[in-house]
Length: 107
Image (cartoon, rainbow, N blue to C red):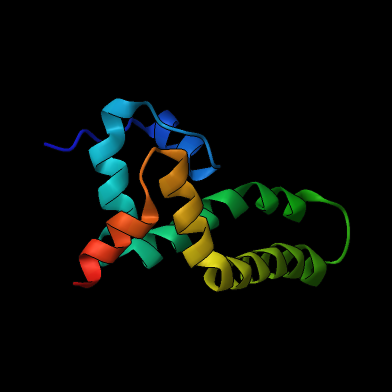
């Protein structure tokens, strides 16, 4: 049975922290399920939430809307391009060998 991390641990995981070994099954599922790419995009979106504070800066309304949107779109674009590498790095970080894990799924 997969143990899901709590909200604070998931937030730390979304920002790149390593989860304890007890969450290994969940991490493996998170990074190898059919929806792994969508999960990566969700983590990137959560990472961009603090940029919403840019909307509080003084200035024209269009700029306060455009700046956070630009950050979100560019972060999602970069995350989409580098998602396979990010996935492999996270697998290594949690003690899995991507060559074995990902190769097994393609068979």
